[in-house]
Amino acid sequence: MSAYKDKDPRIHGIKTKIRVVPNFPKPGIMFQDITTLLLDPQAFRDTIDLFVERYKGKNISVVAGIEARGFIFGPPIALAIGAKFVPLRKPKKLPGEVISEEYVLEYGRDCLQMHVGAVEPGDRALVVDDLIATGGTLCAAMNLLERVGAQVVECACVIELPDLKGRERLHGKPLYVLVESH
Amino acid sequence: MFAAENGLKGDPRLQAISRAIRVVPDFPKPGIMFQDITTLLLDHKAFKDTVDIFVDRYRDMDISVVAGVEARGFMFGPAIALAIGAKFVPLRKPRKLPGEVISESYVLEYGTDCLEMHVGAVEPGERVIVIDDLVATGGTLSAAIKLLERVGAEVVECACVIGLPEVKDCCRIKGRPLYILVEPRLSDECC
Image (cartoon, rainbow over the protein chains, first blue to last red):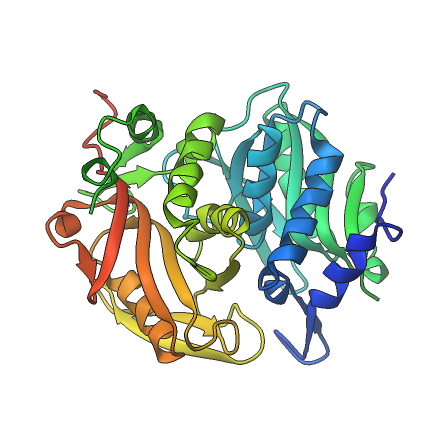
C-alpha cells in the first residue's frame, strides 16, 4: 500500500526542484540531490505539508530519521504531528547505550544505531529518509524499531527509485513516497 | 550572548530545555561531559520551544538563509527555516554534497577537518544565520562563517542550543554575534 500523489498540484513543483547530478558518488549513478528542494521555501514547505497531512491524527508517537538527510525532513514532520524525533545514526556517533543493526551494501556492510530507551514498546513509528533505493537502509531502520517493540506504521521518503525494487524489502510494510525517478 | 540575558530572563522554557538535555560522561573520550540533545528531541514540547525561541528571534530580521552544520545542525535548522520562510543550506563533511562545492578547513584538537557548501546555494548579499546544536571552541562555526562570507553573504548571527564556557565571555565568533539558549550542565544528578 503506497501512494505518490501525482494528482496533487504541489508534487510537480517538488519534483522539478530535485537536481539530478550524474556520476555521483561514482560513474553511472544519477544522484537525486534534494538540497535544491531545500533552497525553495515553498517547495520544501509543500514537501513537509504532504507528509504532515498524511500522518497527523494517526497517533504516530515516533518519527525516526535516517542519518543524515532523514534529519532534514524528519524533525519538521515530528514537530507538526506531536511525535518524538529519534535519529538513526552511523556507528559511534550516538553517546551512551545503543543498539545496532548491520546491513549489506553493494560492497561490504554498514551499520545503523539507535539509542536504547528512545523508543518504547508499543510506540507507533514512521521511518523517514530522503530517498529509497534498494531498501537496505530502511530495512535496517525498521528492524531496529521492531526489536524494541515499536510498530512501524509506514516508511516515508521524498523519492523512490522503483527500478531498484526497494519497496519489496520492507517486510510488507507500506511505503509512501512523493516522487518516483526512473 | 545567552538568551537569559537577552530578553528571556526567567523564561520557564529555557529551564525545561536545559533539563531535557542529557549529560553523558566520558564521551567521545575520557573527561568529556557530552551534552546529548537527542533527549531534547524526545520531549516534543521542549523541542518545539527550542525551535520557537529561535523563530521568534529571527522571523523579523529579514533572514533569507539558515545554514545548518552537519549533522545535529540539521535537526534544528530546517524547522527554523520553514517557519521564517528562508532557504535551508546544509554545511557538510567532505564528499557528501554532489556537484560543485567550496571547502573550508579548520583545526581540531588533533588534526584538521573540513566543511563544504554547494556553489550557488547562497548568493551575495543574503542575510544568513548559522545553526548548530552546540558551540565549544568555535572552530566549526568559524569555518561556516568563512564559507558564507567567501560567497558574499552576511552572517547576521550564529545560533546554538548550548554554549560551552569557552565562549561564555566572548559573545562573538569571527566578529559575528553568537546567540545561545543554555549552558552545559555538569551532570545528570541534579537539575
